[in-house]
Image (cartoon, rainbow, N blue to C red):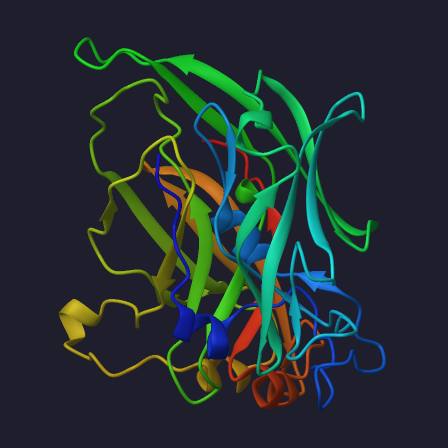
Length: 317
């Protein structure tokens, strides 16, 4: 079971945010109006189950700097406790992970942990509902709920159990752009929903359309004939916006975010999987902003533009 990894350099300059918090102040202390927050995108990329819970590298912002440290960091043995606790639906602790974390410019990177009780304390998970609680010095500041179910693999050569996660993966989405004068993309988390138990799954046709609602005009679309190799495991997918009918018009110039900002109004993104409506994402453009987010300030603080989108489930045809 593989989970998408976030490349270090991408994380430093291109991580997504849910809101538009102030960046960390000089020295790493939390700036005004900046609440501790684990990046949702990195959580979705980091959490997996292969019988046991495992958590890969993730990122956080606006954390207080632990005292008595030679450099800004969290450490299981040397002060500054940052923990992730897995709880079941009854609120009982299943396992607790205490992290090593370092401040890199304005973002905290957590890439390894110790398990309370040691590796032998790690418990195999049963189907059910769970919650990950992120805490600083045992004070919880964020929760990530998810559910786990299982399927018996239909692979006669590799029989076994397939672990299926459900939660924010299906709802979270964002627009990404390096800046307003460059390309932009829709980032979503996808898996093959057709048959989760099938070991060999055909590539899934994916289509995306960006529509301006006031005149129903097709503004942009995904690459024609796009297919993705999806599995029962969620993976992050970056879908690029292209000019409509660019194969016929032979216009391969970059479709820029500024072209959308120049036309105020409401927009709708339609995402199709296997020829069926899958999700719709809506946003509003006004005064050079998307969903009232100051893109220039976001770009200045985070070195990228990343806007959360309102997600809807369209009715199937």
